[in-house]
Amino acid sequence: MEPRVLALFPFLPEVSSYLKQNGVTLDTIITDPAYERARDLGIQRVMEAFLDKEVKEHPMVSDVDYLFEMLSYIVARMIVSSTADEMLIIHYSLAEAVSMHKRLVEQDMDFVHEVALSLDINASLETGENMRIHFTDYLKLSSKMRAKEWALVSQELDSGYLVLDKRRMCRLIQQSLENKISDELPLPVNDEIIETFRPTIENVKVEIEKKKEEFKKEGFGRISFVRLPPCMKIMLNALKGGENLPHVGRFALTAFLNTIGIDTEGILALYATSPDFNVNLARYQIEHITGKSSGVEYLPQSCHTMVSQGICFEPDSLCKKEWMTHPLSYYKIKGKPRDKDKGKDTGKDKKGENGKSQQDEKEGKNDTSDKDN
Image (cartoon, rainbow, N blue to C red; front, side):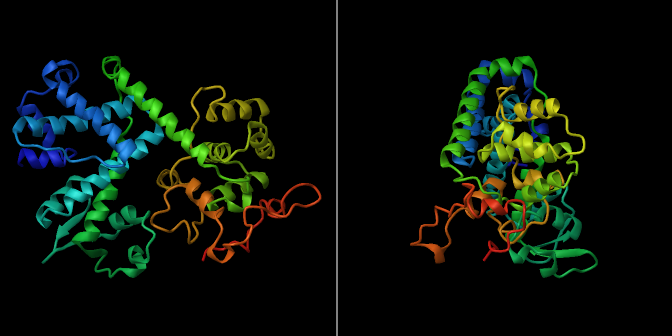
Protein backbone atom coordinates (compact mmCIF):
# COMPACT_ATOMS: atom_id res chain seq x y z
CA MET A 1 0.00 0.00 0.00
CA GLU A 2 1.30 3.46 -0.91
CA PRO A 3 2.82 5.56 1.92
CA ARG A 4 0.41 8.42 1.24
CA VAL A 5 -2.58 6.14 1.78
CA LEU A 6 -1.09 4.83 5.02
CA ALA A 7 -0.53 8.42 6.15
CA LEU A 8 -4.18 9.24 5.53
CA PHE A 9 -5.38 6.06 7.25
CA PRO A 10 -2.74 5.46 9.96
CA PHE A 11 -4.86 2.95 11.88
CA LEU A 12 -4.44 0.34 9.14
CA PRO A 13 -2.38 -2.73 10.12
CA GLU A 14 -0.01 -2.18 7.17
CA VAL A 15 1.38 0.89 8.96
CA SER A 16 3.16 -1.32 11.49
CA SER A 17 5.03 -3.19 8.75
CA TYR A 18 5.94 0.05 7.01
CA LEU A 19 7.44 1.49 10.18
CA LYS A 20 9.46 -1.66 10.82
CA GLN A 21 10.83 -1.55 7.27
CA ASN A 22 11.97 2.01 7.95
CA GLY A 23 13.63 1.09 11.24
CA VAL A 24 11.26 3.10 13.40
CA THR A 25 10.98 1.96 17.02
CA LEU A 26 9.11 3.29 20.03
CA ASP A 27 12.38 4.59 21.47
CA THR A 28 13.24 6.55 18.33
CA ILE A 29 9.78 8.07 18.20
CA ILE A 30 10.14 9.32 21.77
CA THR A 31 13.78 10.38 21.93
CA ASP A 32 15.37 10.75 18.47
CA PRO A 33 15.82 14.44 17.49
CA ALA A 34 15.17 13.41 13.89
CA TYR A 35 11.54 12.69 14.83
CA GLU A 36 10.87 15.96 16.63
CA ARG A 37 8.61 17.08 13.78
CA ALA A 38 6.57 13.89 14.15
CA ARG A 39 6.17 14.55 17.87
CA ASP A 40 5.04 18.11 17.16
CA LEU A 41 2.49 16.80 14.66
CA GLY A 42 1.22 14.33 17.25
CA ILE A 43 0.71 17.14 19.74
CA GLN A 44 -1.05 19.18 17.08
CA ARG A 45 -3.22 16.17 16.25
CA VAL A 46 -4.48 15.90 19.83
CA MET A 47 -5.24 19.60 20.12
CA GLU A 48 -7.05 19.66 16.78
CA ALA A 49 -9.14 16.68 17.80
CA PHE A 50 -10.06 18.15 21.16
CA LEU A 51 -10.55 21.80 20.25
CA ASP A 52 -11.55 21.68 16.56
CA LYS A 53 -13.26 18.25 16.59
CA GLU A 54 -11.32 17.12 13.53
CA VAL A 55 -7.87 15.95 12.51
CA LYS A 56 -6.81 18.17 9.66
CA GLU A 57 -5.05 16.91 6.57
CA HIS A 58 -1.62 18.50 6.37
CA PRO A 59 0.40 19.06 3.18
CA MET A 60 2.42 15.94 2.31
CA VAL A 61 4.77 15.75 -0.67
CA SER A 62 7.56 13.36 0.35
CA ASP A 63 8.08 9.99 2.00
CA VAL A 64 9.31 11.80 5.11
CA ASP A 65 6.03 13.75 5.28
CA TYR A 66 4.08 10.50 4.97
CA LEU A 67 6.16 8.84 7.67
CA PHE A 68 5.76 11.73 10.10
CA GLU A 69 2.01 11.79 9.55
CA MET A 70 1.79 8.09 10.43
CA LEU A 71 3.89 8.69 13.52
CA SER A 72 1.73 11.63 14.58
CA TYR A 73 -1.13 9.16 15.06
CA ILE A 74 1.03 7.02 17.34
CA VAL A 75 2.26 10.05 19.29
CA ALA A 76 -1.29 11.36 19.67
CA ARG A 77 -2.41 8.05 21.17
CA MET A 78 0.50 8.20 23.62
CA ILE A 79 -0.51 11.68 24.76
CA VAL A 80 -4.19 10.80 25.09
CA SER A 81 -3.26 7.65 27.03
CA SER A 82 -0.93 9.61 29.31
CA THR A 83 -3.73 12.03 30.11
CA ALA A 84 -6.18 9.14 30.63
CA ASP A 85 -9.19 11.46 30.71
CA GLU A 86 -12.46 10.01 29.44
CA MET A 87 -13.61 13.32 28.02
CA LEU A 88 -10.43 13.58 25.93
CA ILE A 89 -10.71 9.96 24.79
CA ILE A 90 -14.28 10.55 23.62
CA HIS A 91 -13.36 13.75 21.73
CA TYR A 92 -10.24 12.23 20.22
CA SER A 93 -11.92 8.98 19.09
CA LEU A 94 -14.77 10.85 17.43
CA ALA A 95 -12.48 13.36 15.71
CA GLU A 96 -10.24 10.64 14.28
CA ALA A 97 -13.27 8.71 13.02
CA VAL A 98 -15.01 11.72 11.48
CA SER A 99 -11.81 12.84 9.75
CA MET A 100 -11.22 9.34 8.42
CA HIS A 101 -14.77 9.30 7.03
CA LYS A 102 -14.14 12.48 5.01
CA ARG A 103 -11.17 10.79 3.35
CA LEU A 104 -12.80 7.40 2.93
CA VAL A 105 -15.78 8.59 0.91
CA GLU A 106 -13.33 9.80 -1.75
CA GLN A 107 -11.85 6.31 -2.19
CA ASP A 108 -13.10 3.52 -4.44
CA MET A 109 -15.17 0.62 -3.08
CA ASP A 110 -12.25 -1.82 -3.21
CA PHE A 111 -10.38 0.30 -0.70
CA VAL A 112 -13.51 0.87 1.41
CA HIS A 113 -13.83 -2.91 1.56
CA GLU A 114 -10.19 -3.25 2.68
CA VAL A 115 -10.76 -0.76 5.48
CA ALA A 116 -13.91 -2.56 6.57
CA LEU A 117 -12.06 -5.87 6.76
CA SER A 118 -9.18 -4.25 8.70
CA LEU A 119 -11.75 -3.24 11.33
CA ASP A 120 -13.12 -6.80 11.51
CA ILE A 121 -16.40 -5.95 9.79
CA ASN A 122 -17.91 -9.03 8.15
CA ALA A 123 -18.45 -7.54 4.69
CA SER A 124 -18.07 -8.48 1.03
CA LEU A 125 -18.18 -6.55 -2.23
CA GLU A 126 -21.30 -6.63 -4.38
CA THR A 127 -21.77 -5.44 -7.93
CA GLY A 128 -21.69 -1.69 -8.35
CA GLU A 129 -21.09 0.65 -5.42
CA ASN A 130 -22.54 -1.73 -2.82
CA MET A 131 -21.31 -3.95 -0.03
CA ARG A 132 -22.85 -6.91 1.74
CA ILE A 133 -22.70 -6.96 5.55
CA HIS A 134 -23.98 -9.39 8.18
CA PHE A 135 -26.83 -8.09 10.30
CA THR A 136 -24.92 -8.66 13.56
CA ASP A 137 -22.21 -6.24 12.43
CA TYR A 138 -24.88 -3.86 11.20
CA LEU A 139 -26.70 -3.83 14.53
CA LYS A 140 -23.49 -3.32 16.49
CA LEU A 141 -22.42 -0.35 14.38
CA SER A 142 -25.79 1.31 13.76
CA SER A 143 -27.03 1.32 17.36
CA LYS A 144 -26.18 5.02 17.79
CA MET A 145 -27.81 6.05 14.51
CA ARG A 146 -31.31 7.19 15.35
CA ALA A 147 -32.73 8.07 11.93
CA LYS A 148 -35.41 5.72 10.59
CA GLU A 149 -33.31 4.76 7.60
CA TRP A 150 -30.90 2.93 9.93
CA ALA A 151 -33.51 0.83 11.74
CA LEU A 152 -33.10 -2.88 11.05
CA VAL A 153 -36.80 -3.20 10.26
CA SER A 154 -36.25 -0.74 7.40
CA GLN A 155 -33.63 -2.99 5.77
CA GLU A 156 -33.96 -5.89 3.36
CA LEU A 157 -32.39 -9.05 4.76
CA ASP A 158 -31.13 -11.93 2.64
CA SER A 159 -29.93 -14.94 4.66
CA GLY A 160 -28.87 -12.62 7.47
CA TYR A 161 -27.07 -10.09 5.25
CA LEU A 162 -27.87 -6.53 4.15
CA VAL A 163 -26.68 -4.73 1.02
CA LEU A 164 -25.51 -1.16 1.68
CA ASP A 165 -24.37 1.59 -0.64
CA LYS A 166 -21.04 3.36 -0.27
CA ARG A 167 -22.44 6.27 1.74
CA ARG A 168 -23.94 4.10 4.46
CA MET A 169 -21.03 1.69 4.50
CA CYS A 170 -18.56 4.52 5.09
CA ARG A 171 -20.72 5.77 7.94
CA LEU A 172 -20.63 2.34 9.60
CA ILE A 173 -16.86 2.19 9.17
CA GLN A 174 -16.61 5.59 10.86
CA GLN A 175 -18.52 4.19 13.83
CA SER A 176 -16.33 1.10 13.89
CA LEU A 177 -13.15 3.16 14.04
CA GLU A 178 -14.57 5.39 16.78
CA ASN A 179 -15.45 2.29 18.81
CA LYS A 180 -12.02 0.75 18.19
CA ILE A 181 -10.06 3.80 19.33
CA SER A 182 -12.22 4.50 22.39
CA ASP A 183 -12.03 0.83 23.42
CA GLU A 184 -8.23 0.70 23.03
CA LEU A 185 -7.47 3.87 24.98
CA PRO A 186 -5.89 4.52 27.35
CA LEU A 187 -2.92 2.35 26.39
CA PRO A 188 -0.24 1.47 28.96
CA VAL A 189 2.44 4.18 28.99
CA ASN A 190 5.80 4.19 30.74
CA ASP A 191 7.50 6.97 32.68
CA GLU A 192 9.68 7.88 29.71
CA ILE A 193 6.65 8.63 27.55
CA ILE A 194 5.01 10.66 30.30
CA GLU A 195 8.19 12.64 30.91
CA THR A 196 8.75 13.32 27.21
CA PHE A 197 5.28 14.77 26.76
CA ARG A 198 4.80 16.21 30.25
CA PRO A 199 4.40 19.86 29.12
CA THR A 200 1.89 18.79 26.48
CA ILE A 201 0.00 16.60 28.93
CA GLU A 202 -0.28 19.50 31.35
CA ASN A 203 -1.48 21.81 28.58
CA VAL A 204 -4.07 19.28 27.48
CA LYS A 205 -5.29 18.92 31.05
CA VAL A 206 -5.70 22.68 31.26
CA GLU A 207 -7.79 22.65 28.08
CA ILE A 208 -9.90 19.79 29.45
CA GLU A 209 -10.59 21.75 32.61
CA LYS A 210 -11.54 24.79 30.52
CA LYS A 211 -13.98 22.64 28.58
CA LYS A 212 -15.48 21.30 31.79
CA GLU A 213 -15.87 24.83 33.08
CA GLU A 214 -17.65 25.74 29.86
CA PHE A 215 -20.10 22.94 30.55
CA LYS A 216 -20.81 24.48 33.94
CA LYS A 217 -21.00 28.07 32.69
CA GLU A 218 -23.44 27.11 29.97
CA GLY A 219 -25.74 26.30 32.82
CA PHE A 220 -28.48 23.76 33.07
CA GLY A 221 -31.05 26.09 34.55
CA ARG A 222 -33.07 25.32 37.63
CA ILE A 223 -32.65 21.67 38.58
CA SER A 224 -35.60 19.69 37.25
CA PHE A 225 -36.03 15.94 37.52
CA VAL A 226 -38.69 16.12 34.83
CA ARG A 227 -35.97 16.88 32.29
CA LEU A 228 -33.87 13.82 33.12
CA PRO A 229 -33.08 11.49 30.21
CA PRO A 230 -34.69 8.03 30.51
CA CYS A 231 -31.45 6.36 31.61
CA MET A 232 -31.01 8.69 34.59
CA LYS A 233 -34.70 8.74 35.45
CA ILE A 234 -34.87 4.94 35.54
CA MET A 235 -31.74 4.60 37.66
CA LEU A 236 -32.98 7.29 40.04
CA ASN A 237 -36.38 5.63 40.37
CA ALA A 238 -34.63 2.29 40.98
CA LEU A 239 -32.77 3.86 43.89
CA LYS A 240 -35.97 5.34 45.28
CA GLY A 241 -37.57 1.90 44.99
CA GLY A 242 -34.86 0.36 47.13
CA GLU A 243 -32.95 -1.38 44.32
CA ASN A 244 -29.20 -1.68 44.05
CA LEU A 245 -27.46 -0.12 41.06
CA PRO A 246 -24.32 -1.59 39.48
CA HIS A 247 -21.12 0.35 40.00
CA VAL A 248 -21.17 1.79 36.47
CA GLY A 249 -24.73 2.98 37.04
CA ARG A 250 -23.85 4.71 40.30
CA PHE A 251 -20.85 6.37 38.68
CA ALA A 252 -22.90 7.65 35.73
CA LEU A 253 -25.78 8.87 37.88
CA THR A 254 -23.52 10.58 40.43
CA ALA A 255 -21.48 12.39 37.77
CA PHE A 256 -24.67 13.50 36.02
CA LEU A 257 -26.39 14.79 39.16
CA ASN A 258 -23.24 16.62 40.24
CA THR A 259 -22.93 18.32 36.84
CA ILE A 260 -26.53 19.61 36.84
CA GLY A 261 -25.97 21.15 40.27
CA ILE A 262 -26.92 18.71 43.03
CA ASP A 263 -24.44 18.84 45.90
CA THR A 264 -22.92 15.93 47.82
CA GLU A 265 -25.58 15.93 50.53
CA GLY A 266 -28.34 15.92 47.95
CA ILE A 267 -26.83 12.99 46.06
CA LEU A 268 -26.17 11.19 49.34
CA ALA A 269 -29.84 11.52 50.28
CA LEU A 270 -30.86 9.88 47.01
CA TYR A 271 -28.65 6.87 47.74
CA ALA A 272 -29.98 6.50 51.29
CA THR A 273 -32.77 4.13 50.22
CA SER A 274 -30.35 1.67 48.59
CA PRO A 275 -30.33 -1.75 50.36
CA ASP A 276 -26.55 -1.75 50.80
CA PHE A 277 -26.34 1.92 51.78
CA ASN A 278 -23.29 2.77 53.86
CA VAL A 279 -23.11 6.49 54.51
CA ASN A 280 -19.33 6.67 54.88
CA LEU A 281 -18.63 4.56 51.81
CA ALA A 282 -21.25 6.39 49.75
CA ARG A 283 -19.86 9.78 50.76
CA TYR A 284 -16.34 8.67 49.87
CA GLN A 285 -17.46 7.44 46.42
CA ILE A 286 -19.50 10.58 45.72
CA GLU A 287 -16.69 12.92 46.77
CA HIS A 288 -14.24 10.96 44.64
CA ILE A 289 -16.44 11.25 41.53
CA THR A 290 -17.26 14.92 42.13
CA GLY A 291 -13.60 15.79 42.68
CA LYS A 292 -13.90 16.91 46.28
CA SER A 293 -11.47 14.25 47.49
CA SER A 294 -9.75 13.15 44.29
CA GLY A 295 -9.12 16.56 42.75
CA VAL A 296 -10.55 15.22 39.46
CA GLU A 297 -14.18 16.01 38.71
CA TYR A 298 -15.64 13.43 36.36
CA LEU A 299 -18.17 14.39 33.70
CA PRO A 300 -21.07 12.07 32.84
CA GLN A 301 -20.35 9.46 30.17
CA SER A 302 -21.53 9.84 26.60
CA CYS A 303 -24.50 7.89 25.25
CA HIS A 304 -22.08 5.58 23.45
CA THR A 305 -20.37 4.68 26.72
CA MET A 306 -23.74 4.25 28.47
CA VAL A 307 -24.84 1.81 25.76
CA SER A 308 -21.58 -0.16 25.93
CA GLN A 309 -21.92 -0.42 29.73
CA GLY A 310 -25.50 -1.66 29.52
CA ILE A 311 -27.02 1.34 31.33
CA CYS A 312 -28.89 2.98 28.46
CA PHE A 313 -32.51 2.26 29.38
CA GLU A 314 -35.68 2.74 27.34
CA PRO A 315 -34.44 5.47 24.95
CA ASP A 316 -37.27 7.74 23.81
CA SER A 317 -37.69 9.58 20.52
CA LEU A 318 -35.36 12.40 21.59
CA CYS A 319 -32.69 9.87 22.56
CA LYS A 320 -33.00 8.33 19.11
CA LYS A 321 -32.06 11.51 17.27
CA GLU A 322 -28.75 10.80 15.54
CA TRP A 323 -27.20 13.97 16.95
CA MET A 324 -28.18 13.11 20.52
CA THR A 325 -24.90 11.79 21.91
CA HIS A 326 -24.87 12.81 25.58
CA PRO A 327 -27.31 12.75 28.55
CA LEU A 328 -26.39 16.37 29.35
CA SER A 329 -27.49 17.43 25.87
CA TYR A 330 -30.84 15.74 26.48
CA TYR A 331 -31.25 17.58 29.79
CA LYS A 332 -30.38 20.95 28.27
CA ILE A 333 -32.70 20.52 25.29
CA LYS A 334 -35.57 19.50 27.55
CA GLY A 335 -35.11 22.78 29.39
CA LYS A 336 -35.49 24.93 26.29
CA PRO A 337 -38.89 26.49 25.50
CA ARG A 338 -40.75 24.94 22.60
CA ASP A 339 -41.80 26.99 19.60
CA LYS A 340 -45.39 27.10 20.80
CA ASP A 341 -44.19 28.61 24.08
CA LYS A 342 -42.11 31.39 22.54
CA GLY A 343 -43.20 34.77 23.75
CA LYS A 344 -44.23 33.35 27.09
CA ASP A 345 -42.27 33.51 30.31
CA THR A 346 -41.12 29.88 30.12
CA GLY A 347 -38.05 30.42 32.27
CA LYS A 348 -40.11 30.60 35.45
CA ASP A 349 -42.40 28.07 37.04
CA LYS A 350 -45.18 28.89 39.42
CA LYS A 351 -44.14 28.22 42.98
CA GLY A 352 -46.14 26.26 45.48
CA GLU A 353 -46.49 27.14 49.12
CA ASN A 354 -43.43 25.04 49.97
CA GLY A 355 -41.28 27.09 47.61
CA LYS A 356 -40.88 24.29 45.06
CA SER A 357 -42.03 24.63 41.51
CA GLN A 358 -45.03 22.62 40.41
CA GLN A 359 -42.78 20.68 38.04
CA ASP A 360 -40.31 19.81 40.78
CA GLU A 361 -43.13 18.45 42.92
CA LYS A 362 -43.56 15.80 40.24
CA GLU A 363 -39.97 14.56 40.42
CA GLY A 364 -39.58 10.83 40.11
CA LYS A 365 -42.96 10.43 38.41
CA ASN A 366 -43.50 9.75 34.73
CA ASP A 367 -43.83 13.02 32.87
CA THR A 368 -46.86 12.71 30.62
CA SER A 369 -46.97 16.40 29.80
CA ASP A 370 -43.46 16.62 28.32
CA LYS A 371 -43.46 14.10 25.51
CA ASP A 372 -41.27 14.57 22.46
CA ASN A 373 -42.75 16.14 19.41
